[in-house]
Length: 413
Image (cartoon, rainbow, N blue to C red; front, side):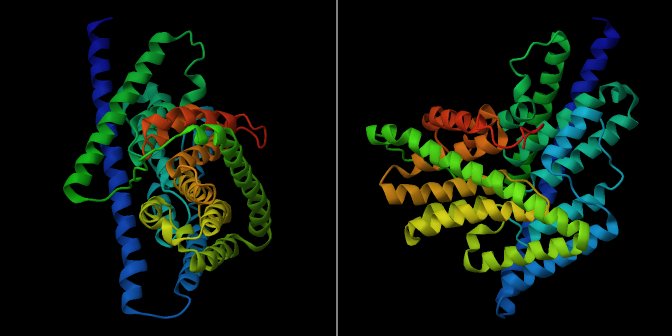
């Protein structure tokens, strides 16, 4: 290795670290603005102005505003699997509407959309990464690696899970042969540098100024032979809910594609908001991304009937797809985790089984069906479940991943 190449590699790794820090700052600012907006719309204003059907009216108005904005700006965020597919196939992602896409990704979250922020944010950040690579000569020949780095850092930071960010985009390649071993090692190192810097900066900003997302820990396991005997039946039950999610996805895709084609995006997003508002009025836990609802559920589940918790989880799976396909584009990870936890609480209360065990197994099975990546599921769920339950999560995610329903997607989703 020549002196010039050593210097070039040092500069490249410094750039990766700097990029990770910038990604963390963007994510933190986005989430901070989201939290402030949600607090204003859903707490401050209702406290000052009390009128009936607030949720229905606000969600419908939110859908109307979102539809008008998307129609005028032509800025519609891609779903996460579409971002991944474009990056892998074309080694390119557009950046000409980055600021407009930020607004389009933020609006559904402000108005209570049953979605996570990862899809919109990933598209924005990958676009900025492409812009940086395209305008800096020393890294112009590494644009594909920069795009992959952006995805890893974004996912790792949003979920505060570095291993998930590193593994989720490329799990299928981990054990595959690769003749360019040096290139693969360099790419892995650059991703690690970016993800660790991103999470470090994000942690510092959260510590100093607050903000961000977070999943609560669900522990105090008491796994007996009864849980072990019921393990596989509970996994299969979770798989059924995962298949239900896929059915909801296909159905809502067909319905809202026809609505968009015949009536336009404004009608589609407004209808999505109306459905969200109606269900959210009677079952408020079905709204928003779900991480705060898990905290609420964890501390107050005993006040709910088991069938209400199961129904809430199922309707959350339904609403997430309604939102995404109607034009309220976002991610499904946080909502699906909430659904699994809610259903898990309900099943545990009905059967007398250990609650964290049921939550972990059912959530793992649902995510296994939707992601088709068992290792990534385990790394993601390590955020809220004890390591002792990881073998069960891996088994449930694997069984879910081999269910042949639905086309296996490229990317994370």
